[in-house]
Length: 97
Image (tube, rainbow, N blue to C red):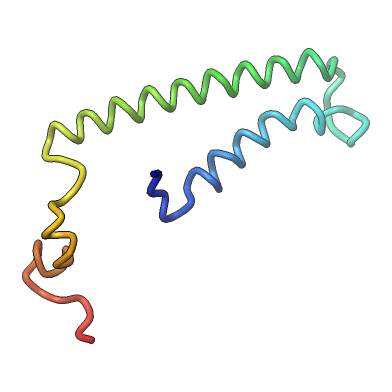
């Protein structure tokens, strides 16, 4: 599964995609925008650009993850995860409960 604990993709990724696509619709003069363009043609341009950005971001992310994996891994051992990273990495507890 995807571990996006801060909802970065949901907030920034989807917000950026929707904003880029909806520019073709909401940027027209009918909605008070600046556009004097053909909405259908502009929508196609926006969709192509979103596609390029999604592919670029995916390729860059895979490359970064591969490099990070070569530099020491992306996960701790199951034992360290069970113990807790504060104790296993730093030798102390964050919360004494």
